[in-house]
Image 1 (tube, rainbow, N blue to C red):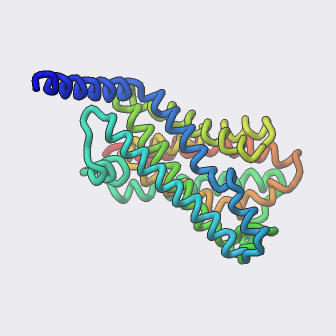
Image 2 (image 1 turned 30 degrees about the vertical axis):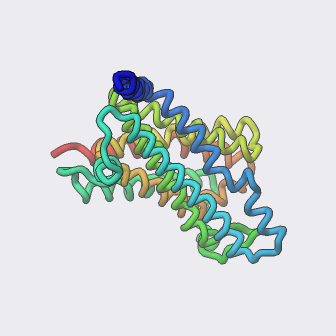
Image 3 (image 1 turned 135 degrees about the horizontal axis):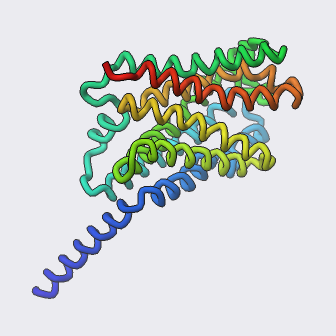
Length: 298
């Protein structure tokens, strides 16, 4: 009986020590989450879901619906598991409902108006910058047909982009600007947490694009772009104390961005290179300054 009591105490102490050890290393935990999230969200590519459906002669709308469903559901499942993991290793565990209210939704005293406007003004800023740079390079064309036409397996996703954009808009933001950023922030400063979550966001894109065999120069560009964009969205999330502005900005840019960037992207390296480099550098800078001014406390 005495042995059983001591054994229970030892198990409880070891469990507590494990929690504290994991909680003491949010950077390592964030890296682990990034790697796992990268591969799970690419499960449709790994198992060639889209290609198998096309080979089977499935119509385009069902090809994209099947591909989207696998990605969206796998993203949802891994995010839920990640939230449960962070709940487990936390020194002060809270319920998932409380986590959603404090980290994902809006805390008390936070301006709903400013939160939603920040999430809308940031992508609007991106579109204006893209249009100005594309016009300056003589490569501006607003191609709305590319995002409103019917889905086709050879010509592109068309209006299905509005569904596909939900995957990065929701799951990537909750993971990087929600779970990872808040985890790092419990041990380090908010600015350092924004930096770390943004770098891990860039790493996520490197892994994701490595899976589809993108050339090394594109991997470097995607890392730089996603990291800089992540800094902007992370700043808004910290200032608003909610991941909602990040979700809105990410979704709107992914959903409507193709209508603006498609033409300069297909205009040759002499235009595509400068266009993407300038937008990648200017958008985070201008959006950050806008958010810094707009989100000032009264």
